[in-house]
Image (cartoon, one colour):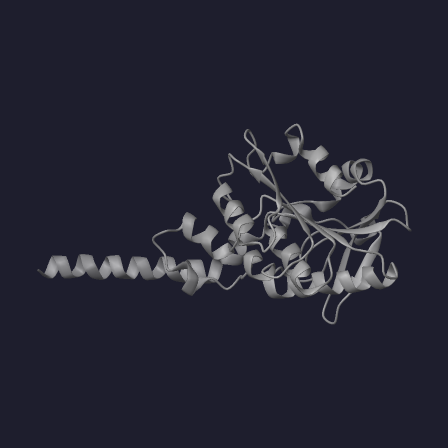
Length: 255
């Protein structure tokens, strides 16, 4: 009995250690800015916040329709410049690096990233004097983009490998942990878009093992107006942009 008691105590302590590791280490699991860092001189615009300067890139004609892009958790957003220039020739595209990414100051966290995204929208909308704003979000960026669309006027919203709620994605990866109690990084596109009235495109990767396609379907079902869903049977989470039809779906939606 004493050995059984020790075994149960060890199991409880081990489980508790896993919970603490998830609580303290979730930002390191979710955000991976290390390989994205560049010098400030490599960027061409800055967004000044109260506690940080965020930097990024602009492409396309200055008088083009504004388009905001929010990338994935390890994405160098500037790598999209050549493709986006071809795909969206009538847009002025803004690629802002999250806090801690690119040449931006600070450390990534959901609350500040969402607030920064709203500040970017406000600055861009003011600069374009009333032009409609379109938004693209990929992976974790779909959570940021959905937050913008839920709190500001957005005409068209394209979401690439999105999810309905980050907690559901995390619970699927860690079914033995009380994820909803431990999660501090909150993204809930289904909640943010509960009353969204603009057009929505969802690009789903059917072989996605990071954000399972069922989570994209959950988001589609939660939207008040059925979105346009394009599914790529041979695409995974990180290679969807290489699948035939990807660029055509995006450019046709945002034409």
